[in-house]
Length: 359
Image 1 (cartoon, helix red, strand yellow):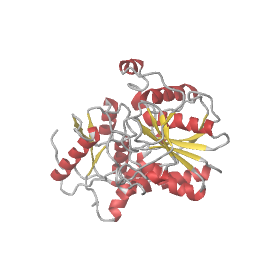
Image 2 (image 1 turned 90 degrees about the horizontal axis):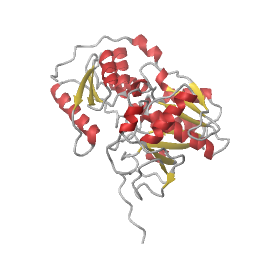
Image 3 (image 1 turned 120 degrees about the vertical axis):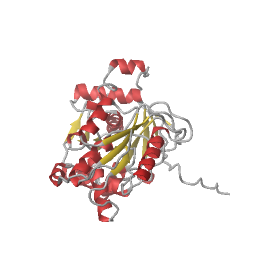
């Protein structure tokens, strides 16, 4: 695809009034076993989806620092969800948006991003190290070299990513009298980093559970090709605050698919890989700690997954194993490579230098 400078955008700041204020739903569907229930923030019902919050915060922060001139193009890598958020922010703040996806991006998501006015470029093969994410980032850097004045939000490392979720934290404290356990999917690390500190100021004893994908490197497992998209990472985003998490769960595709379908049949709210994974772990947390108030965030809805998560033929072709009803516990992220739902109460930052043993 040829690369040309984008025409300047026209700002539509009235869109910003649509940001956030999403419903908080009580979920009681067995997942897969009965549980006391948990709260879920339905971010897919907000304009631009969950990541519109971070996209607006990132572009506003860049404006304030003088890094993003008015009307300059914005170039970023996406697996889909941030792309929708940036398309929203670009329209609201007056910036053309160029998105770099990959050939595994669903056709429906490609159409949607283009319909929202974003220009989409696709990489056709994963990088030898870092997979699709690294390949997309390499293309982003190529585009920045060819587009003087373009801005790269760098969602994985930009602290304004987390700042975008302060509004969500306020919405949770306004609705809940008590919160004991917060369950967060982890990809760029933005929404967990943005929620934990303000929520712990309100509830100092809050426990935080991170939910990752099997095959993700974020919490010290080896990076592998991943069927699940939207959570997990083959690289190490600096926005992930490992110190915030009390434990981590890795969820496999079989468990996520099962949870998504149970949610759709029993609660009429569901979503994709991240939603299924956090719902499964939230139900587990509610069972494991009777009487605790548990909350999570459903990042997106089911529509982009109709040809994957909700398609019987697609799932059969991938030979997904039977989902397991409870997680296997491992003592350390480096102890064993997990292949399905597992939990670990030792949380480490893989980039921290190893400590010398005491004499």
